[in-house]
Image (cartoon, rainbow, N blue to C red; front, side, top):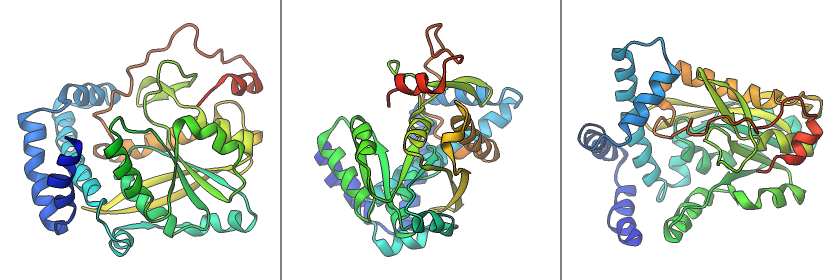
Amino acid sequence: MAAIFYYLFVKPVSLLPLRLTYVISDISCFFIFRVFGYRKKVVTTNLKNSFPNMSEKEIKEIRKKFYSHFTDFLFESFRNFSITEEETLARFKVVNPEILKPFADANRSVIIVGGHYNNWEMLAVGIDHYIEHQSVAIYHKLGNKFIDNKVLKSRCKFGLKLIPRPEVKAFFANDNQLTATIFGSDQSPSIAKKVYWTRFLNQDTPVMFGAEKFAIEKDYLVLYGGLRKVKRGYYEFELELLFDEPTLCKHGEITEAHTKCLEKQIIEAPQYWLWTHKRWKRKRKPEELDEAKTVKDQLAEIKV
């Protein structure tokens, strides 16, 4: 069934002119939002809890804009299955790749932390062109092998290297290349994982700790990567250096910093974050990490 859907719908859609792609996106938005109400309750609850001082009218306006962006994202992602390198470079730019140049010259690898904000699939196909570091991203394998293979090939066709989540520890243990590893640290961690708790969008929030853990263990510089929509279908990626000596950071300092960077972006333009995700489904338990433990003990316990 997945193969039929891919070859009869996704692949043909990926070949359409961009303007026609957005006509289909607008039509699809009507059905996804107005007719089927895909995860509308989740989106509404997330928005109300994140912006408690907003009026009902303001919440509805953000929600409407979100669904328009969300369907654009879906169809832009379909388009990536057939996108050329020329089109990728026309629609995606890293505005300040020179920030990585001194670190590349010094043979220092970096960690770039971001979130599911704007179109991260354009980042996947575009970033390797702009930087000297080998771009690497952590990903979660999809349940359907056929679709997983297609997505893997699409994301990696212009140089990105993808590391399945269960193999991350082994990757960092043997990472002797000059790499820029991208972490999307804004999704709800699974129940079994140790996490760092903080306030994010006015809510008690567990944040995945992998970026901080490996930055400290490997002494990799930490940057925040912010995606900005220039106009429909066109994106810019800006890097911000957060820590050049991560081993000197206090426990949670790195995680707090990149979480606040993402929060700032969301507050400035909330319609571009993935509000359909059940971000706050995990609640803090008494047995969660004791903040009084030493950094060394914390890192020894935390698993990706």
